[in-house]
Length: 401
Ligand SMILES: Cc1ncc(COP(=O)(O)O)c(C=O)c1O
Image (cartoon, rainbow, N blue to C red; front, side, top):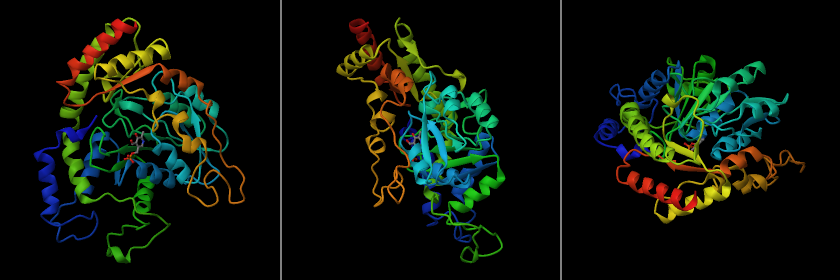
């Protein structure tokens, strides 16, 4: 998935535009910048790419989640439903907003299970964050239906699926807001960075103000004289990141996604020849951003043994079931309620009562799916790796199945 593999002269040119004018900040310095507004330009091009009215660039995907929750008014006591297979940032942002993360199961898409989502909704549910995990789509239409019937806003966590689509519509553009990450290992990268997209102008204006200490961005006065309607914080993106983003976005479809799709197809072909292997359900294969290939073995034992042979052959797969950063039962700090807060916030109230508690065995369906699944990360420059991975797959099939 990494756009960093193809950083080249296009990125250099964009960066030099910024450096040569010594212009690092996205706001102000109008004369010095000679009409160059990289972050603003990146936002415009990203919104056009996704087909949404607005895009707001921020300092990371985590920041994008935090800002999105803030502008929806998420507050202490609220519950926000997400899935137990995601990166920690998804629920860290919920806790940081003072709300309680409620974890639902994944289904065969390895994304939020609509039935499990429906079963977790309570009068306290104030947002839903489905995650388009590992490059492709959640059952977002079903999720939007359930959310709509219950009048609950949806924030799509599209951090891992930039460029993905469902029936031609950009992932991230179905919900009230969609968020993206451009960190160092993402499909396209700005080093660190993130984006929020939305068609709701009111939410966009709030997000733009909140991510910049509440500045009202009044074009008729200087920045120092701007007023505030509410408190905010600093989640701004800088011009160098905007410059990188522009160059990477222009390579997204024709280079990054095209090469990933080709590589994924070659790997999938090899796996398809093996009888006992099944694949993750992808609701719209044409819209898959093809950053990961998830396949399953009939039992957890076979999955572990299969991966052992692949590793011995120098081409081990990712086994999310044991992964410290992406799977619920491995989040020991969450399960044990550990924080730096003197009073135990967000796990306890100031008077010491438990606010939220998580048990290891809460997500049996997620455990069952992940325990049998192996994942190959698909990158751009894989010509040397692919024959090695295919050889490892064939050897594993011969020894284990
Ligand atoms: C699903 C998901 N959400 C959010 C994030 C956070 O993005 P960032 O690293 O830009 O803060 C990530 C990063 O890996 C992610 O995978």
